[in-house]
Structures are given as C-alpha cells and as structure tokens.
Image (cartoon, rainbow, N blue to C red; front, side, top):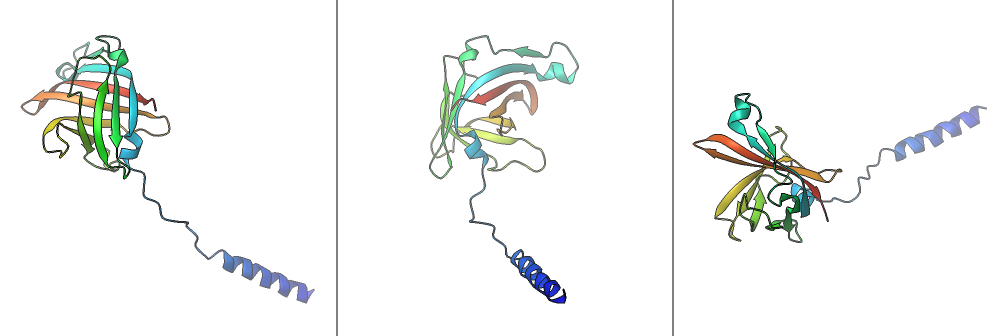
Length: 172
C-alpha cells in the first residue's frame, strides 16, 4: 500500500512539473483597424444630423438620407497593401459627394483607443498624404458583425453645425 502511494505521488509530481512549461505558440502581429476596414462597404443607413438643433433640443434634428439622392447605391472601398498599410479609397455609386470621392487614406491610430475617443480617418488627395481633404470619425469599429459607422462633421469656427452618419456593412 505504501509503495502504491509513493508511485502515485511520483506520477503526480511529473504531471505537475509538465504543466510549468510555457508554450504560447508563435508570435503573430496584432490585428489592426486597417485589416478590419480593408474592403468594400455598402450603406445600411445615412443620417443627416442638425448639430445646432440637437444641442438646443429642437425637433426634428435628424433626417434619414438613405433613400434620397441615390444614396441607397452608396459604396466605399478602402484598400491596403500587402503589409496592411493604408492605400486608396473610392466612393462607388452615382451619389452626390459629401467628401472627395477618391483619394488616399490613413488612420489617426492603428488600434482602438483605450479612452473611448473615436479614431479619425484622414482623407488625402495625394499619394504622399500631404494634402488633407477631409476627416471622418470612425465611431464604430467593425467586429464580428462586420458593420462600422463613420461620421462626417461640418463646422465653422470650431463649432459643428451638421454631421452625416454613415452606417455601413461589409460586402466583400
């Protein structure tokens, strides 16, 4: 009986020692927002928000533009290179332009912010990314649901007066 107990303790000690080895696998690069945004996005909803009316509790302060002015055909393509660095973007569909319909883009951060602030999508007219044409706020980053939300804000003198909120879904 004593012999069986000793053998059992020896086996348990070998098993416990085997659990101390770390095997975390191979290192892989973290997933960036660029990877999540890469591809074609179709419009689910486009909302125009009167920021002045909203701030002063005046109704109505929003209007759905999704079915007006051909916006139901709105698509946007964000492309990246093989190293997941931003490339060009292009608005597809016969829609009135709210921002430059084609150019180059990059993000203010490759990763989601820990302080809950929105990541900014900078839009440029040149490949060197020196001529900024507009900024979009990435207010909802794509996840498992393959949806994202971007916001275009128009203002004057540091005060926002109107914004356009694009709710998009992946179509690639």
